[in-house]
Length: 122
Image 1: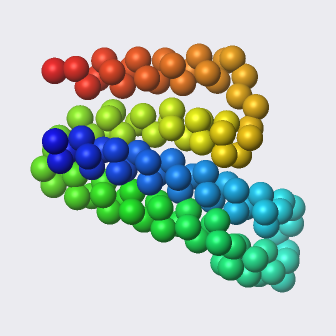
Image 2 (image 1 turned 120 degrees about the vertical axis):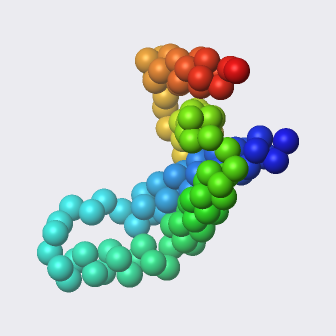
């Protein structure tokens, strides 16, 4: 039971982190140069962006939860089970970032779901 709960925490915090960081970076704007002063200016905007910071916090929760679950569960279970994050992330992109997801990406997402289901079977 605790393993399933930890998988849910990992998946949701990882997907939330990806979505929030994406939203934050879109608010900051395109990084179109490698000039040091411009990169410092962009970094300043990134480091005060609330969505970016919440995304980093979410990914931190995901990372440390992943470390914790590895202390009692098999890696051969944890990695496939947490790969469902790809599905949750694409749903986040669709509903929170308002991205248009084409049929091929939805098909790929469904294939990931089926693969995860197969790997997680005893």
